[in-house]
Each structure stands twice: as structure tokens, then as C-alpha cells.
Length: 61
Image 1 (cartoon, rainbow, N blue to C red):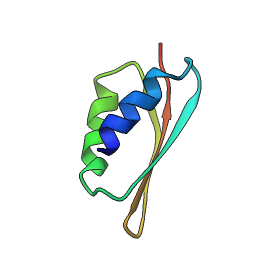
Image 2: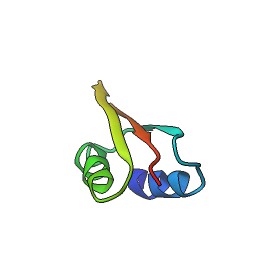
Image 3: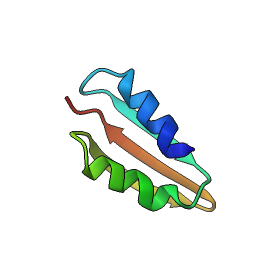
């Protein structure tokens, strides 16, 4: 579910905007970076705090 919501959020943003994603699904740790690698977006940071996975993604073209 975090990946789907990330895709939806990015589709409604303008290029150059940054999306903050916070998830509790451990699968997002691998899924979100893998998705970003296949797109024009850029993963700025990826962090884990307890059971929370936090990502900052720069929207590409």
C-alpha cells in the first residue's frame, strides 16, 4: 500500500517538489527505492526509526 500511495502522490506533484513518505510496512524499505530507480525521480534520503520507514523523494520530469 505505501508504494501505491507514493505513486499516486507523485503523479499529482510538479517536477522539483519533494515528497516525504512515512510507512510502517517493512517491505517499503526495498519497494520504494526499487520503484524510484525505474523512474525519473530521485531518492534523496531513506531512514528507519524504530518501525517507521521514512523516504524523501524528489519528483522528476
